[in-house]
Length: 237
Image 1 (tube, one colour):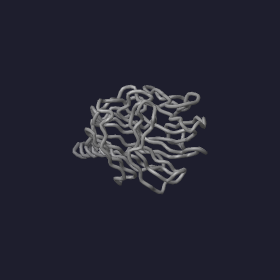
Image 2 (image 1 turned 135 degrees about the vertical axis):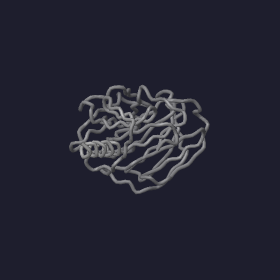
Image 3 (image 1 turned 45 degrees about the vertical axis):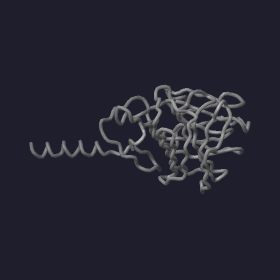
Image 4 (image 1 turned 30 degrees about the horizontal axis):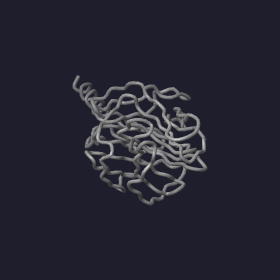
């Protein structure tokens, strides 16, 4: 009986510290309480991790809505299979330069927010950039931070009435076809952005002071893939 209890306790401990990862990406520890629903993991009441593993390939994941800033045909976001691991991909190859492809979660709205996401620039002649958006009001008003393998830079923007304005920029080595992690924390009017765990950008801005939705962004014909989209109140992880 004691042996069985010990095995049961060890199993619970192992599950509590399990890593929800796929193939070639870094491990992300997830602790209880944990609820699995659709393609996301509810780490706690206010901490959500989207892995897309339970979502159907070839369609938009449930609970997400696409939008477009600028010109061109509607963008195309789908869950795809990346060597056995499901990811969310922007697949439209529309080429207008002033075209921002958006996908926004319908349910998660935050003011002071912390977001992390893994991204991989796969293809695109005009652009391969991508990253998270937050305090999203509509398709023409939001914050975004993105990395671009074609330009080897990491930039923070605000989009106001459809016009993109750069707040900060850093030059970095970013390779096409390689996974990277972007993280942003906004608390009050202070924005801090990290690339692969290192703080690279910091800014203060008061343009959008109210809670808004969170989501993902690419530009023009960027074929960019995303995974492990995690959203929580600022200071959570």
